[in-house]
Structure formats: C-alpha cells, structure tokens
Length: 92
Image (tube, rainbow, N blue to C red; front, side, top):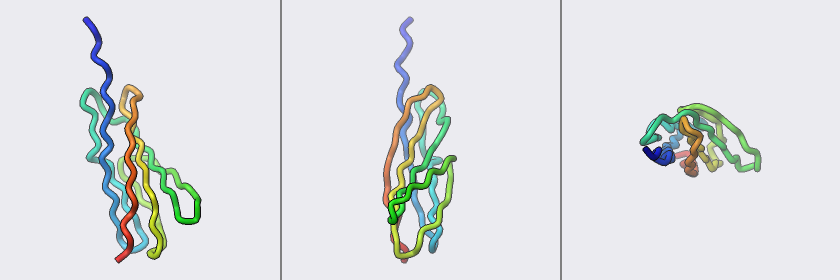
C-alpha cells in the first residue's frame, strides 16, 4: 500500500499591536495529516537586526514609530515546512 505523501502544514498568523508591544500568534496554523510541531518567528527590525523567537505565541517590543517584518516558519511532525510573512501594524 503506497504511503500518502506528507502534506505541508499551513502557516496562519496574526500580528497585533498594543503600543510598543507586538503580539505574534500562529495558533491558527494547521497540518492536515499530522500536527504542527514547531513554530519559529523571524522578526526583522528597522535597524537591520533580526530577532528569532519560538513558540505558538510570542511577543516582541518595537518603538511606536517603527514597523517590523515578521516571518513565521511552521514545521510539522514530519519535518515539512510552510512560512508566511506579515508586516506589523503601525502604532495608532
């Protein structure tokens, strides 16, 4: 019996802002034939530095006059990956 090909997970993230606090949430990410095993966040700051965070939910601090580019890499229990990128909202 042929083994079905491992389907990639689907990265689904939301990026929210509360003052200088940026909230990252990937709890909506799914894997149709297994489980989401790991989520890594790559936060590109305006000054060129990159911050790496791990977990379904994470937070970072960004000055209110700056935005960041956030990439989430979602890995499933069989090692397949998906990623998605969002820019943080500007502070009100």
